[in-house]
Image (cartoon, rainbow, N blue to C red):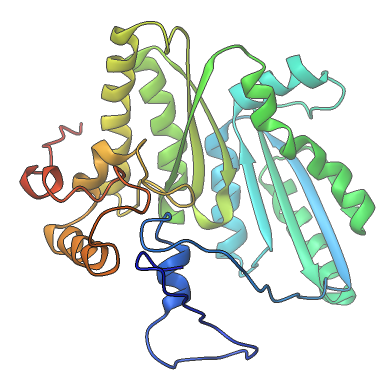
Length: 307
């Protein structure tokens, strides 16, 4: 539903369609500011016939990130590749019990799917690669049920972090995979410099790591919130300097509005304003979010100091 009340239907029952602009991508990625989605038709994909999951522990998050790079360098393309750091695992141990969480200071999950023979051979090869990289508590599962048992821990990370009692500020940054080790090490530096616990976990396979700043008294003390903003200034500046982006999944919305000008060029921001004006001239769709005609035009990107 467009802002003027007209109904737009786009897409179709085909595998390819280049009839005009990618309107599906435009509206799905608009955070509700260009239209209201009232109906969605999904394409159902069959599950691959075979699946395998490897779970491995490492001495440090940097070593786990190096293993991720080694997997891709060897030519493997896992369907999923997840990483977790020490604070994330410790929170899970307190919340779920030590017997459920593998030993070690970092955790890696590698998921493979496809035809049975290829999945089996790739799983064995990746297991050998991880063993050479001194992975500990190494487990391998095959089949949907056994693989899901290894994934159960990963699905509880967010809940376990919330159970610490700290405010969990989840920043879904993305860096090139070549910078994955650098990001994990930088998170440690950020923690030391600003005094907040940092919990990193997420989608190492595409460089999308959830850097969670864990904060006490965030909602009660303005000074704490100011310190958090300074820490996030540094995080986002470094991510952008590496050629990354400040959000891979969650969008800008209100939470990242402060950093929208730093993450984009004036040309990009002006194009967003023009699209918003053309499709929603009265500003009635999800108002107040990151496309701000006045402040975004006048604000210049801040100058970050990066060591």
